[in-house]
Length: 74
Image 1 (cartoon, one colour):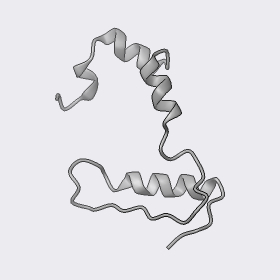
Image 2 (cartoon, rainbow, N blue to C red):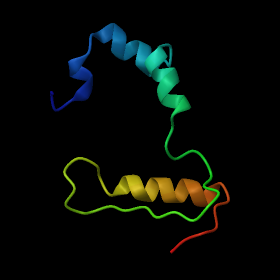
Image 3 (tube, rainbow, N blue to C red):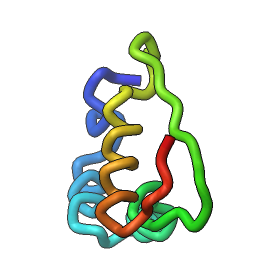
Image 4 (cartoon, rainbow, N blue to C red):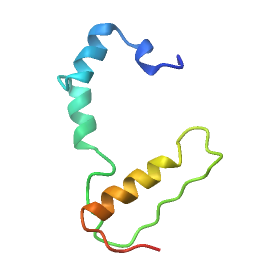
């Protein structure tokens, strides 16, 4: 996989994704993992040494949950 993910796709595919005109873009929007409000307590785990997912993802999700009214935290 190239270091710049968009280099793995044809330019017209990248343009379509950026303009939300593809089934993939629509599916990704429908399966958003942080723009919803948890209805029960949950934990978000992250690790500073993770080489696949940056710890900031947990913070973005947490901030989004809180902004949408989630009030459980630990």
